[in-house]
Length: 342
Ligand code: AHG
Ligand code: MN
Ligand code: MN
Image (cartoon, rainbow, N blue to C red; front, side):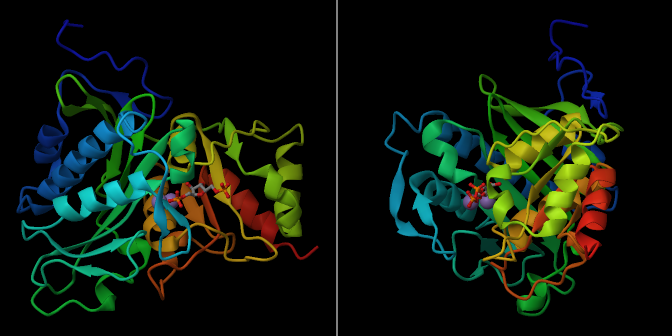
């Protein structure tokens, strides 16, 4: 291996290690269809740049007074952190002004943001997922989904942004962890890039990530088990039998971080419904659907406990849903446990 090559270490069970120095810009250019205009690739570049800017501030949040609360609440009535607001501002700024994005749907904005009514794409995003963990220096992330409008020659309507996840053109996340990684899929597999802060580039680390055959973890917040329905407890009891794939529980409390670890090592992440909030906490449009899209591209799947998350037709941009994403056999088993009446 020449000294030039980044050494990504052993590929995860289900991926291919990069050979040579490949930036995300080059990877996107090399992998876009011959007929492509390049607009989607440029849009993913814009999101990569947003990730670099958010990473640079997240890294120094404790030094630049970007820790702590913003003194406002988001459309869900949840306390906004200063970094939530910063990340949302960065995404809005980098998704505007170039004629690629028509409408932005953000966790931090009450209504969809009209950017350019003749542009081809809609972007849905959670600018900073896991933000309650920022002050304790736990990994956080940005989740995004991209829809190509079916008809960009007419003014946008809610049909452009209230779409089932199966219509997604691309989805991904930026994980601000021990390193900053951008993981995306445009429907042709899941690919992971690591930000080299000295070079300022996302460099390909692994391509074609796939869930391993044998899952290593399940990620459920067992502290909430008393609020779960009976079927969830049946699932946890099933996991702890001797003949099941895993009984190792890992829960970070940052969906992107839990999802990423399970993608590399196998597992399922879940945020179930509860007695007093059957729809759970996570939002379908900019958390559940993009993660389910990625899971399916890596050989897994996403469910709300009854049906595939990607088949759910959203009725509002902030609607919540129970979310279970990851290893296919574990999600299938969870549905079986929830489905049984007794
Ligand atoms: P967000 O910070 O965007 O509101 O998302 C936080 C979510 C998700 O990241 C995580 O899985 C979940 O909240 C954790 O919730 P609990 O703290 O209730 O477990
Ligand atoms: Mn979130
Ligand atoms: Mn968020």
